[in-house]
Image (cartoon, rainbow, N blue to C red):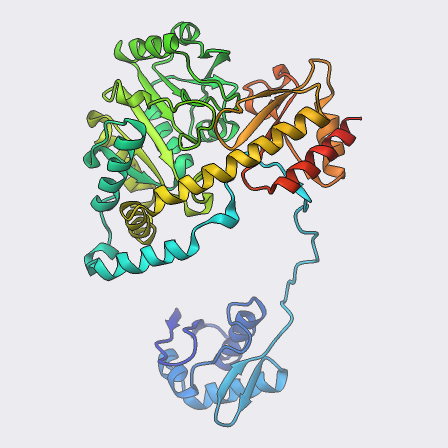
Length: 464
């Protein structure tokens, strides 16, 4: 019968070594081969210290002489290094199945990736200060398995922020923290699937959300978007019981849902339907007054989604759902089964960052920076690509650029990539990409003004 022992060494790495005492293979050969495999595969890192022969022998239930002889053999073979006074360490060994050199992902001189904030402007110092302050004030119980909805202090701080900046009727008891808006969509998809509720989605809409919905067993009904936003009459005719929408700044066109359509959508929701409001870039408004969240009008029929992906960094994976009271239990259970709860450390830091006013200061600074970059992009497009029509310029961190119907947009994307400029075609946002008009999504938040100028000039050359 095989035995497995994990060392309890007080020095050196912990090891998992398997010895089968029923095998005809001698134990010293099993041990030697097990250590060789661990070193070749990188499980034992170069220069890491090995457990002493006495400790490893005790943990494996073998004689110390067997371990001493095995170590000596591996030293002779070059797998281990033994020096007097420094113990036995792992040598540098070529991996047994070293991967061949594979070219790294394509690097671009200018990357108009939409949706990314200025990553270099992440407030590292302020974030570290917030984390240190929060840790100093936090009791040890907070590091255990906490409420899947998130720390109460974090939910209360987010509720306060949403009430004063977005007009959301937020209560900490009705907020569920999640790993970004993407997980929020996945959690809602599972709930809708289990309840058998058909879901509609804007067409065009964010392509990743459509993929997440499909991955979770939901095929969203496409509902067209025009100059007034989501077509509510078409939504009513779709037979859907819920809809995913971006009323404040439609993704990707940038259209704001008109007052008439907002009224119609609220009436549709109050007739027993559910609205999922993705408020993905509400913090950035430049040429018009901000539009309050739809949730503030019908909190019992609207689920509100927000995150820090556009404001701080997507890598933080901090998002939230504001859920009608009757749905909190279902979403809380789904979140619990997904991962038992979001990172406590990130919640602590974000709570302190919000409460101290650091988040508001960061947003004010980024608005000034982004409006300058947006203006640089508008100016460059007007000069270099006058045939293009720009949509969504009044808000957000990207522009939608439409070209004449006959324009071969796929060729432009390919030629631009060959000239080291990355652009994303609009077609991916459509339920049927073949019906999409020629267009591009141009993100500008993570680019300098000089990069924007150079990128658009290159696009113009590619267009010619």
